[in-house]
Length: 208
Image (cartoon, rainbow, N blue to C red; front, side, top):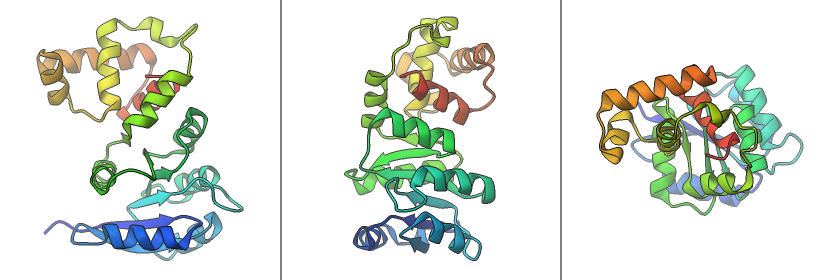
């Protein structure tokens, strides 16, 4: 039987933490801890390992961005998903730079939150559609590195940001999986990017 995902919840509102625990704890999810501040989270992680941390941004003292940076440095096996009310691209980009592997809004559904957790736990990345849309609207592409890419390569990167696999992208664009992989590798080579997480981070910074 597959081990349950060890989940830690960090938020400055205990009632919200209690709601998340009641919503998610089950066969696939084991709640290993919670914290109402960044400092408390870092202290507890030394004793209680976690696979996934749902991280609020607006916490007292160390905010979610600063805490995510420290988690990435001290607990690299723990993957952070921002769970926030903020959807502006500045905070999204800062969380990405801090090391977050996902960004989901607090008004999301249980289904989407579970999808994000499972995707990130499996080594992927996940960003809600609204976060991606707002980032696209907010960031200009003047003098953009995107000028190096073909329209097809950009199209494929956009689908990667939506967490689609090569097979799913191939079906979406009615091309072969091999062609998708070739375009993806070419784009990453042109941009000097080595992995999918870095590609998604780049794409969001560029408004894709």
